[in-house]
Length: 386
Image (cartoon, rainbow, N blue to C red; front, top):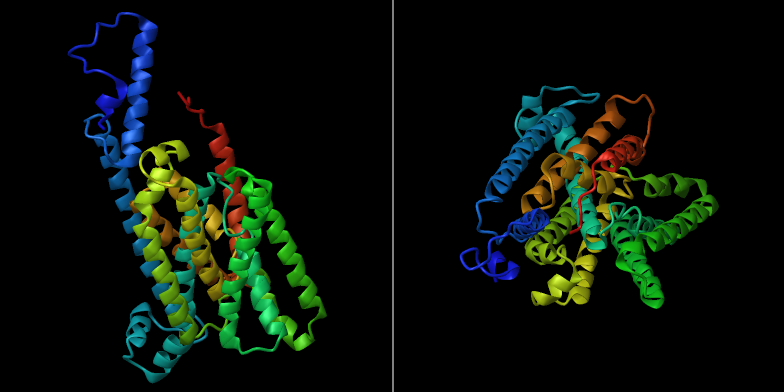
């Protein structure tokens, strides 16, 4: 049904409107229809075409800038360290060319860490954006609904059993899914609205964090240091086996998220509208939520519970490029990778604290930035819901 059919008869048969308030209401309805068409991508009028075009151009511009910055940071991360080399030599070493010492340093020590930051940063950012849309809450993220706390709990519990290091990422994934089950169980029993689930998630996150801290306190000294990275998140000690397994899983989950964008765009219109368009809002929202939680758990399994990437990046992208679309989701992934990789560079080469986890830096950078965004959003004029 076109927007003309939805709003009433065409102007050729409608009576002439002379009342000022009626004309204002008509203009408001037209703007609402235009916004709805823009969100669903079905509008055919000329009023929303310049807006869509400018948003797409702005998104493409920011995406190119983020990609260029990501290439620059990658070259810097591969070439900087105790064994210094130029960016060109580092890229050649990554391809297996040049000095054998440089090839060893880049391929075996630096590249796995860099690739882990890129993959996990992109996955966390996309998961945060999806959760904020599904929960309709700007504070929703893996950090606030208990997913990262569950991943930490699973990993530390596996360490306590003395299991192989290769099983720890799987345990982290299982812990994230366990947190999701706890959240869903509490919400189902209390019949809580979706927008209030973040409050339950915070309780789940804090409870799991307390359990992790209790286990670490009771650990022997040789295990406590290994478990500490699962309290704040770290990229230290990543190897190619973890990178390939984690990258393949995160990549698969991100492709699935991209394929579901049309469905979530319909859900953005509200449950009533989504139901009228043929979706089952409860079932579809639950399926997308499980997919997003799986993505967040996989990212946390690779790096640990890195804070604020999933929470802050969607706000930054929304400020730069506007409402969420398929294009802004790609920009979100690029921005998350840039944020995590740049934070790791600060940890390694700028901050004079040996062994500082990258999660401490992301939290330090993300908290004030998010506060600025919230203050800015609070000062913006509120739009009418008419």
